[in-house]
Amino acid sequence: MSLINDVRTARPVAPDADRPGRGERVVARSGPGHVRADLAEVFRRDYALVVGVAARVLGSRDEAEDVAQEVFLSLGRSSVPTGQARGWLCVAAAHTALNQLRAGRRRAAREVIAANDDTLPDVADAVVTLEERRRVRAALARLPHKHAVALVLRHSGLSYADVAAALDLSPGSVGTTVRRAESTLRKELIRHASSD
Amino acid sequence: MRHPTEGVLRRLLDEPAGVADADRAHVVDCSDCLAVLAAARDDAHLVGAALGSEGSADVDLTAAWARHEALAAGGSARSTSARAPRLAAPGPSRPGRKSAAGPGRHSGPRPSRLRAGLRRPAVAALAVAVVLTGASTAAANDWLQVFRTERVAPLSIATGDLFALPDLSAYGDLAVTSEPDVHEVPDAAAAAAETGLDVPAVSELPGGVTADPVYQVGGKVSATFTFSAEKAARAAAGAGEPLPPVPPGLSGSSVRLDAGPGVAQVWASSAGAPALVVGRAVAPTAFSSGVPFEVVRDYLLSLPGFPDQVADQLRSFAADGSTLPLPVPADQLVTTTTQVDGNVATLLRTRDRTLAAVVWVDEGVLTVVAGALDSDEVVAVARGLR
Figure 1: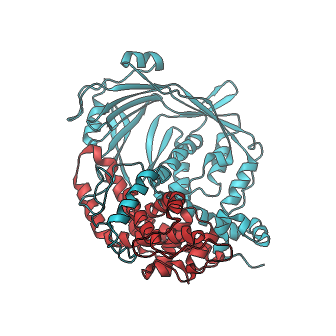
Figure 2: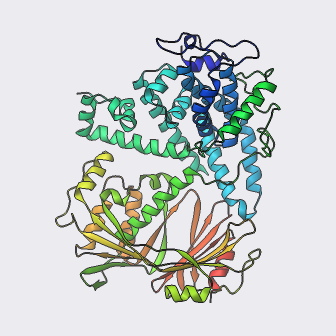
Figure 3: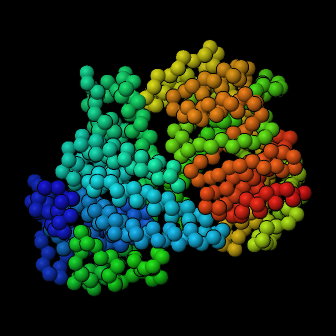
């Protein structure tokens, strides 16, 4: 089972992830009010990466840190083996951020309209930046979910093997998925740019 | 042998070691696969720029961990379902931090990598245009002057074209022989003394622009582009097409680009961003080392990756011989022409009407007036320069 399905069904602990491979570090399942012993170590190691994944989806550092905190809270209550935590966190961050993005599209549109109504010269850069963000994030939200996650993970620096393991794909399929997602996103960006 | 899949070709861009030797060997000699590879590379570049985050390397790990511990202690009753994230739930926040779901929440005007991605090719395109445009007019030592800017004309390029423009350095060596050394000087007199230019004086500032300007000057910048058939061949392979036959004598021939000196007067807005900029510089010139310019121009225009539409426009400009094409992202700017002191000037404004600029060339000197102003205001400033 892929990690993405586990996350989408709101099960922070993947059944497969509960079965550590040979030599993998076993993490005791946490009881109520307890967190896993390796959390601080994983947090130090992967927090910046997880923020980066969410930021690519949301285009906002602050919102990305919110998402990162969210998924680390979930990890803290899970027994995902340490060796699989990075992939689990990245998928969870991408998924959570995409959900937040889709939920927030209407709000973001209102923000852009409000910003465009503001004609003060010194907000010109902010207006352009917001418009770019809106366009990119809207296009990302329209991608098939798995394509969007694969795209974000790959552009966050995960290897093909890591993306494949996280999404239960073959490395060759990762290339195809990423390629299709990039092609679709490019067409969306060009189409919307030309229609402005 | 069958062609590798698009997925394999996509991986070739990121992890060539992960692609089978047979596939890699096939791609090198297959123009079809090279074309697919080039398209994949362009898309990856565009999407990479579009998805560029604002950086996570500088996260405050200590503060983040403290926040996490506080959330874990105080928010344990909160479900963290990834399907229905509730990030707006009350919880400990960093001092002064905005609510995640607060109204009007958005970050400040940080530079965007997407926008940077749009601009960098435009600069490269300008350099290409300088090289490509013009006709021989005078000799200087062993250099043949092939271009001198006499007026500026707009050249609209769609965003897609900007990304597709070839980088000149991929077709040879670009050696910068003189740096501009931009620095601030105390006043107009000092700027004039350093640059040898008449520093334009604004007769009447637009409403809302106040105080005295800051003067910045830069010296002459000079660079030499030497065409390399070997580099061009590699670039062509990367673009998925074979290199067109190189005309005799072209390989190793050079074009020298000169620009400047220049001076800029900058009026800051209350927020610190430039509200008005008046710039003047010796316009770019290009010299060829003897190879007929038309040969260099036509060959470069024929290179793989150069959009047909832009190439056609450049050819028409080249026939004029005295025009500096100004690459403009057509999806963001609107261009028109106007008159400033008897010169044809190009007027540009953003589609949201927040920024405008007017630029013209008079006797080899380029002047630009730009700012967070209306088109009428920048034209009024331009026509009022003394």
